[in-house]
Every structure is written in structure tokens, then in C-alpha cells.
Image 1 (cartoon, rainbow, N blue to C red):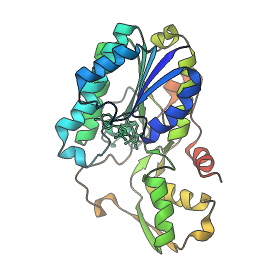
Image 2 (tube, rainbow, N blue to C red; image 1 turned 90 degrees about the vertical axis):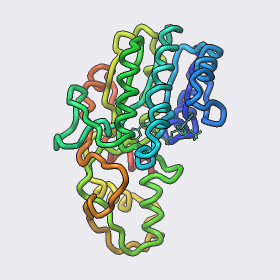
Image 3 (cartoon, rainbow, N blue to C red; image 1 turned 90 degrees about the horizontal axis):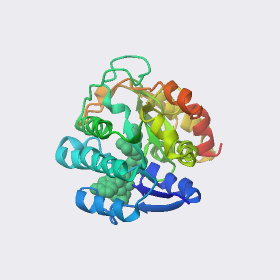
Image 4 (tube, rainbow, N blue to C red; image 1 turned 30 degrees about the vertical axis):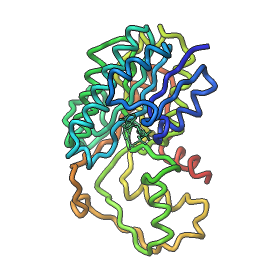
Length: 289
Ligand SMILES: NC(=O)c1ccc[n+]([C@@H]2O[C@H](COP(=O)([O-])OP(=O)(O)OC[C@H]3O[C@@H](n4cnc5c(N)ncnc54)[C@H](OP(=O)(O)O)[C@@H]3O)[C@@H](O)[C@H]2O)c1
């Protein structure tokens, strides 16, 4: 039975991975209270103690606005810790699955981004994640870096639960219509790596590298919100009367975000013969509609 080591088990993606990966092997999963990824010595020790065949890193510093003022902390968690994971994975001959973000792009391409497109992060979070990708690539070994986008879960306080809650408390909701991305259901994202972890290390080693992996298709935040409201299985609880399009410029935030960051996921599909569902299908399933 292979040993799998998971970081970030309380996050949107990590929580789903914790469920999905459990039947696949002996799963060792950590949250930040059990292992703080800023402590690199402790991180190395934990990896050596478990000596896994697979390391999956769903932990990250993900507060995009706060990262503007906590640059060093974001860098430690998003770049230094993944470098150590990649180094230890290489020593153990283990496969390493790491996640990155569409925010490595500046969003000016106006069509879906491929892995070969130039990066140019607009904010400190995106820069720290890009540094993490590059650190993992430099170390080498059997590492998959999966760039994903607009990850959502029905748990917690992300975009989908917020829209559902706002629709029950507000008559008018304004949502930005000029940000386009690929909404990605955390459960679908977790489930798609399961078959990869059932292959031998050689299979992943031959396919090591950078892949885009998001819900298929692109959509604006406004149209995403409209679909959430339409598919809400308890729509009778909604009091909302108007959903209005807004501009990103109307909601100033400390961190600038890319306007168009949908991902072209064909490299992943062709390499692994797997694909995530279209974002609308995943949303329907997530909402149980
Ligand atoms: N959310 C998005 O829209 C999005 C978009 C593109 C890419 N991504 C990437 O996808 C991956 C998963 O994102 P997510 O949305 O699931 O993130 P999330 O819900 O914010 O979860 C991140 C987890 O990282 C853990 N973490 C943070 N600092 C830590 C530390 N010092 N030590 C140990 N653990 C720490 C937290 O653990 P505790 O809860 O235990 O504190 C948290 O549960 C990340 O790599 C992220 O960059 C996300």
C-alpha cells in the first residue's frame, strides 16, 4: 500500500483531497496547526518520517489582497515550502503534485492561456506562486505542477456560498462582468488526480511538468453568479430581484487581478486522457441541481 502525504487538508481543495485520497493508500494529512510550512526544518523532518511515495501539496498562502503586505510570508509558504517538498520528494524517489494559479498571468491575452504563454503576475500572491512553480521545476524529479483557477467549494466562505447567501439577504447584487476565468470545483479537481496516484512513479516521472487544469470553458464572474442563482436548488429562499453587471474598477482592492485568465487545459487532457467537466456541469453537480 503506498503512502501519501497531503498538506493543506483543511483548505477547499485539501479537504476534498483528504476524502478522495484516503482509500488509495496510507494517507498522512496535515493542517497548519499540525505542521507550519514556514518551518522548513520541521517540514523536511515530517516528510522524512513518513517517507511517502506521493506528496500532494494543497496548502498555500491564498489571501490575495493581504499578500501585498505579507510578501515574505506568502513567499515562504508558496515558494520556499514547495521547493523543500520537491527536494525531499526527489530524494525519496516520490512523485510530487503541487498546485499553482492563473494569477501568474496578467490577463491581457483575451483568450485562454496555454502553458507556453508568458507569465507576468500582477500581484504579490501571483509572484509567490510563480516563484514556487519555478523552484519545483528547478529541483526536477517526478513533479506535476497543476495551475488551476477560480477554485470553489460549497464549504467555507468562497464565491459560491457568498452568492447564495447574498441572494437571501439582498434585493440587488452587483458582480463584476469584466473578469473572465475558469471556475473549478474543488471536488472535481481532487478527484481527477486520484487515477494519477494509482499509476507507478515511472508513469508520472515521464510526464512531469507544468499543466493547466481548470473547469472547462471561460465565464465572467457576473455570468458565473447568474448560473449559481439559476441552479440554486433552494431558489425559493432567494429574495434577490436584480443581478447587475459591474466593473472591476468599481471595487478597488489592494491587489490587482488579471481580467482574463481562463485556462486552456488541452495539454493535461492529451497527456493523461482525462478532463475536468465543463464548468456549468460541475456547478450543477456541486449544487446538487
Ligand atoms: N482558491 C482559488 O480560487 C485558487 C485559484 C487558483 C489556484 N489556487 C491554488 O489551489 C491550491 C488550493 O487552493 P484552496 O482554494 O484550496 O486554498 P485554501 O482553501 O485557502 O486552503 C489553503 C490551505 O493552506 C493552508 N496553509 C496556509 N498557510 C499555511 C502554513 N503556514 N502551514 C501549513 N498550511 C498552511 C491552510 O491551512 P489551515 O486551514 O490548516 O490553516 C489552508 O487550509 C493552492 O495552491 C492555491 O494557490 C486556488
